[in-house]
Amino acid sequence: GAVVSQHPSRVICKSGTSVKIECRSLDFQATTMFWYRQFPKQSLMLMATSNEGSKATYEQGVEKDKFLINHASLTLSTLTVTSAHPEDSSFYICSASAGSFISGNTIYFGEGSWLTVV
Amino acid sequence: AQKITQTQPGMFVQEKEAVTLDCTYDTSDQSYGLFWYKQPSSGEMIFLIYQGSYDEQNATEGRYSLNFQKARKSANLVISASQLGDSAMYFCALVGGYQKVTFGTGTKLQVIP
Image 1 (tube, each protein chain N blue to C red):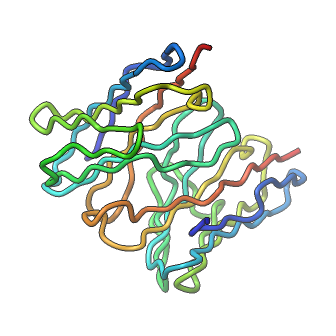
Image 2 (cartoon, rainbow over the protein chains, first blue to last red):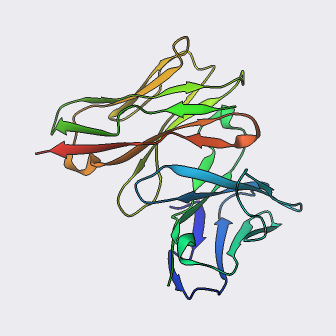
């Protein structure tokens, strides 16, 4: 079963509104979660690193005021796309780490969220 | 800085044949991990196989094996006995410090009946 759950899987919103996407780790506590964006037929691009209890670290070129990330607990991180525009339409996916990667597959992905801004 | 390169944007393979998907990487980290993920058209990322930089043996998971050549910085995925359900995008990924994952551009694999 899924160890990282992402919700909603699909969302359509009007231009100018805000939309929130949740990422939950189900079986473990995740001090760090990651948010990625994927345009059609392209690779996943890291947007930001979400740290529990502190501010997110954004990658270069990502507008922190537009993509608000909140990691309020060890099992939940949220991405809020504020004042959404059609160009924000994309596939957003989160991942969470259950421990050191040295021990093996400890990076789990959510199911992803398709955002369409109309 | 981390970099992952997948030079094959698309590949075709006959059903029941084996196929190799190429992946090269570059990192300054001493400890790192390499992943392969499968992404069907529905979008979810499906974990296939993992190789740690200190693992001496190549990783295997069922029909998947990872040909890890550390000196050449390559981590090719080999899929044996291809099935129609293997048709998907395949991403090679590198994880180093701070658990940050860098993805390659992907290879679209199509299995032909």
